[in-house]
Image (cartoon, rainbow, N blue to C red; front, side, top):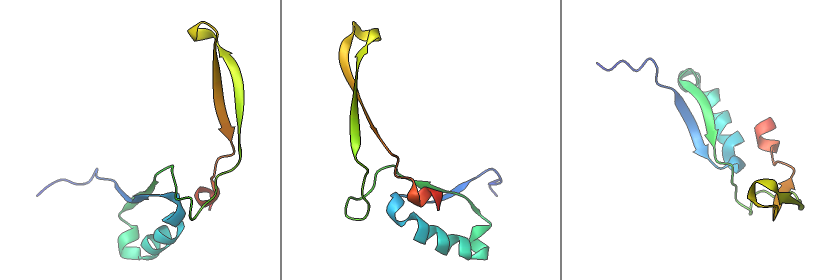
Length: 84
């Protein structure tokens, strides 16, 4: 008889594009929902189902590497499904 009292069950653990639908099904089942600790997702998605915002390149000198030219890509985070 294993003591599984500390086990946390994370459902979905996949892309963000389908997480709302899957979470709705799992959490609407009272018998299942009481065992669900959270919902996992990957930060990448499928370009067929979601769009990524425009990005901009911010150039700077990297002082930790002899002032070498460096760039950082910045964009809005695609958090729509996470917010919902």
